[in-house]
Image (cartoon, rainbow, N blue to C red):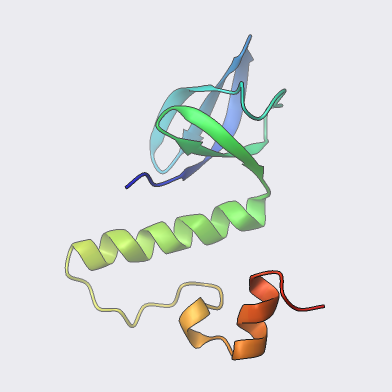
Length: 102
């Protein structure tokens, strides 16, 4: 399983960006997302930026990763994700989330 990590661009090199996120700094290949700028948020998989995201989405992914890592360490599942989890959504909300609602 591959998990995307939200990382914020801090510096640029041709074809790469230096990014920080979740307590680490990495040199990330940006070929799949094109030009990036300092301050941009990228979703990084195995050293490659796969998607450009906004700060709100980065926060959601980080909150979800915190829950996953907490569960892996035996913490309870009653923590607040900071956003509405799909398991707590109505059928209509799930349709909208999946792109089926108008």
